[in-house]
Every structure is written in C-alpha cells, then in structure tokens.
Image (cartoon, rainbow, N blue to C red; front, side, top):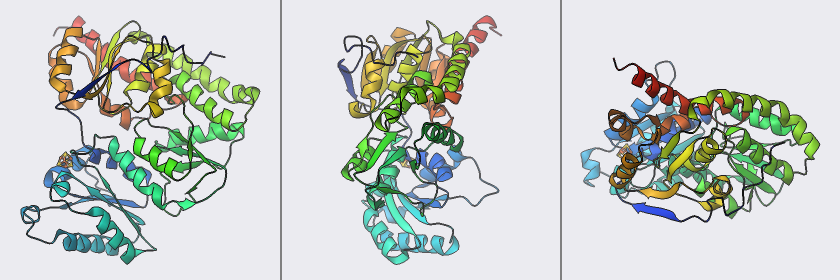
Length: 427
Ligand code: SF4
C-alpha cells in the first residue's frame, strides 16, 4: 500500500506565502457551467436573463442542439430593458410562465443572472420567490448568478448548487452525500466503489431529478468531488452537514486518499478497503505510468481558471514527475484544497487571482514546457512557441477516479507530444 500521509509541513505548501493578484483576468463567466449542469439535472431548465452575447456564449459552448428540445435558453434584455424603460420583472414573469406552460417536463427552473441583469439590478431572488408561489408544487424556481462580473466559469456550478441547498428537505439520517456534477459513468464508478466497501444509500448533489429523495441535516457528511464548490460547502455547513476534508480524487493517489477519508468516517477496515481498491489502483498506476512518459521532468505553469489547479498540480508533480513553476487559482480556499496543498512539495509560486499581463511576463520568463490556461491565452502563447493545455477541457472531460487517471495524464501529455512533433517537423 502506498504511504498516503501528507509530507511534513516543511515540504508541503499549505503555509507557503500566496501571491495575491487583483488585476485584469482572462476567464469564462459562470454561465459556462450550464452546459454540463443541464445534462446532469434532467428536469431542470436554465433561463439566462441576459444579452445576445450571453446567448451566443451558450450556443457556441453547447453546440447546436438539433434533436432535443434544449433545456436552457436566454431571455434577451433589449435596450429598452437596459434603459429601465420596460418593466423587466413583468416581462420575466411572462416568459417564465409561457415556458412552463409549454414544457410540463420542467420541474426546476433556474433564473440565471448575467452581467446585463446585474447592471440593471434586476432582482432575480424576488422573481424566483414570486414564480415559485405561482407554480408550486409542480415547479421549483431558484436563482443564481453566472455573470462575468461576479463569477469565473466553474463558479456557475457552485452558485447553482448553493442555491439548491436551502430548499433541500431536512433529515437527521446518517448519510454520505457526494457533492459536484460528474459525468454519469464516473459518478457510478465512485458510488460502486463505496457500495463495495459497504457504504450504501449514497446521495448525490445535484440529483438527476427534483423529486429525488435528497435531504440534509446534522447526520449528513459530505465529500466534495470538485474543488470549486466553496459556497456550496458553506451552505451545507449552515444546514448542519459536516465536510470530509481530503485530497481530490484525481489520479491514483488522490482517489485513494479521498476514498480513505470516507472509509475512515464509516469505520471500514483496512482489509476491506484494500480488497475493493487494489485492482483499480493497480490499473490506474499502470495507465498513469504509460500516459505520463512525456511529462516526466517537464515543467508546468498554471494560469488561474477552473480552481482545479492545486489538486492537478499535486497529481502532475507527485504521480507524473512534473515540476510546477507557478500554480495559480482564481481563489484558494484552504478549507477545501488544504489537503492537496499539504501534498504539494514546496517550490512553485502559489498565486491567487490574476493580473494577466504580469503573469504572462512571469510565464514568458520561465518558458515552461507546458502552460495550462484559458482559450484566450492559449493561441498567443502557442504562437510564441509554448505548448499549452486548455483548462476548460479538464472540466468537460471525465477525469476523476481510478479508471480515468490515465486519461487525465494523457490530457497533459498530448500537447507535449504535439509540441515535440512540431519541433521535429518544421514543415
Ligand atoms: Fe458575457 Fe457577462 Fe453574458 Fe458572461 S454573463 S456572456 S461575461 S455578458
């Protein structure tokens, strides 16, 4: 069995100084989360109260949906609304009521705020209350912000899940809740491993349907599957639930440590734990070893984007043999990523927030072998001869748990191989 105890704090990063940056930042807004959330929550509709820009973002991020009636849309705020000339609340009620009349399959309606709705100070919380009164009990109407003024792209999921927590039923039952939207196949793998250990009745937030038997209370312990769920974490604690702090389930080591934190909480003995995890751990190690050949001894630089940066830096340095130069995240919440920081060896610059010009200078000076960044920065950096990895792919691709560990390493090694090939073949 691997030693999973974190390295001593003299080597871990938890207490290292953090470079705090507050300048221009380059990252998608929180509306992006709707793309994966609408697939996960099968009876939900996301109504963005926004502009044509917001509609274009969603359309291009999701692709054109030809065969299915989409479960997201944009109520476009026209210039008259923006100038405060029309009663946007009345208009919103009309659009929502028409939508719900046309789509009886919708059981949860999310009113999603955007930059324009924030600028005109449209009170979506009040609208959600009013619409809930009108359409309860068949439809629950909630609101959250996905605006680029307030959120970076993974914060959209956090805001959405946090908006659901206050309306969950109260239960004092002893239960485990997994929190975070995962692809179904990945979620099934996690639940199956836990079931094999004897941990049954595992709950998941978000549940696939509104009428799912999902409650929360003092008997609930929860494990986050995504590191960007700070507001959801706080909302669950306010409901009396307790967080199981652990490294995130990326790679063999992270997955084992995450599972072990749950197993310890539920009193699963070491023999059972090893019996259930031994085979997938071995598969994960083998797959990582193969996929990470191109990564060994190479350097990596993270721009802040998805909030996955710290757990991924831990995976890349400890399991793939990379050296991290800078690990930047939009926010560093030590109550959530503390265990990953404990396992990340000292050395890289830790940065929170962004001043993009200053960070680009640091990146150019460092000339990393691989730069993980958003789409807007990737092309210019590639043109300067730096290999890049688009951070957004890490959110759209199944990368959690044992069976995806090799694919996760592969996501980073592919751009490195491509860069090598381009060097060899100048044509
Ligand atoms: Fe652009 Fe703001 Fe709409 Fe996002 S919410 S697409 S940043 S206008």
